[in-house]
Image 1 (cartoon, rainbow, N blue to C red):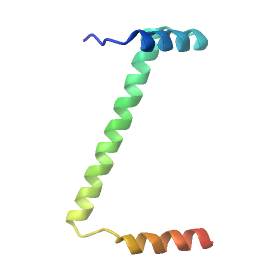
Image 2: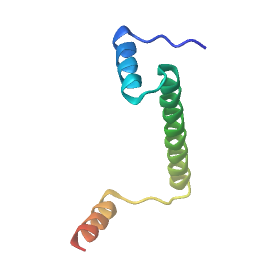
Image 3: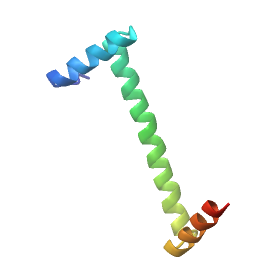
Image 4: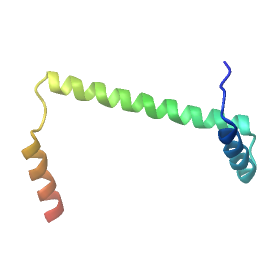
Length: 74
């Protein structure tokens, strides 16, 4: 797979790699891995939320507000 970066992105990546004493390619792979991991966590959280809604497990706007009020009063 080939990924095309703009000249600005290439410059930023090269600068960051130099600052960190790392190879630009390895740094890019690390960034992509972090993104993919975070995206997977997000998708999983959304799925859990949708499943909870289907089971009727949810809070109303008012219930959330009351929880925040109790939290900040403590």
